[in-house]
Image (cartoon, rainbow, N blue to C red; front, side, top):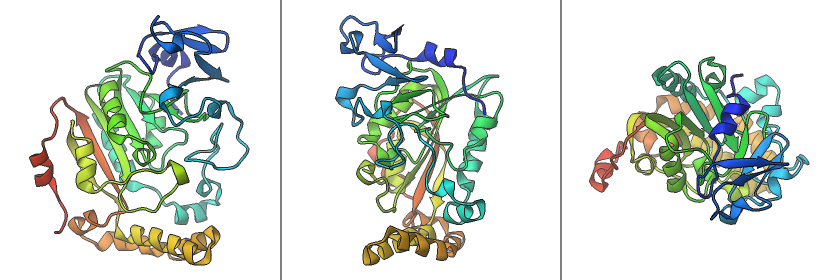
Length: 324
């Protein structure tokens, strides 16, 4: 697995509140700006090897959460403390492929992203990188890519803890940003995308996967859904390289049936079992034309290149690709 060296990451990190350089002390980092509240104690804690660079006054993340140990109970999009994987990741391989099949769309688009990265040692920032995403493993195995990853919790594959609304990296510091299944879990998706745009170099690349028609997951940490047009407008300051459906109407029906059974039986286990038995419904996705799938997709993707010009309202109305 190729992760950027800790010294490279530490050199890049800045204060999430004011983007000033940081200075290190015993177990903490402080902002060097005399006007920043994080220039005084307690500053930003360092928990184990993870700097916790969260502006706690402006975040849903509590100061105590990143320092907490993992007691095995899932209380949000990730458990507090160190992430150890999802329920699906703990299943035997054969069952895991039924419950959570490989994301071939992500694999293709990540391959395209990697082939378009410039230079001998491009830097790639994984937003929401507490686990290696489905279909994005190639990011971590490409020997020329310097991978920096963060999340709101600690993980063996992250180098720091941060809130994506305030990414603690300098402007124009990375070449690409994958954000897979992240934007539904943030309070202000346009702000997060604005931060992604800010930290990307000129012509930098972004890859995002976001739900359209999915039931609530991660409980109180699930906030937003996007149509295909809404998703495109969210990335209005990017040129489209590719966009489309990750999972279509068959997968959407599978999600709905799972949660319908949960509601009728008051049992999450019954819903999961039903989902396993009806996993063949995903095959319906293959026979539905893209325009019809767009209007009834479970999840969507966008691969884009950074630009300064914003998409206009008329352009987004003309963008619609559905069947209506």
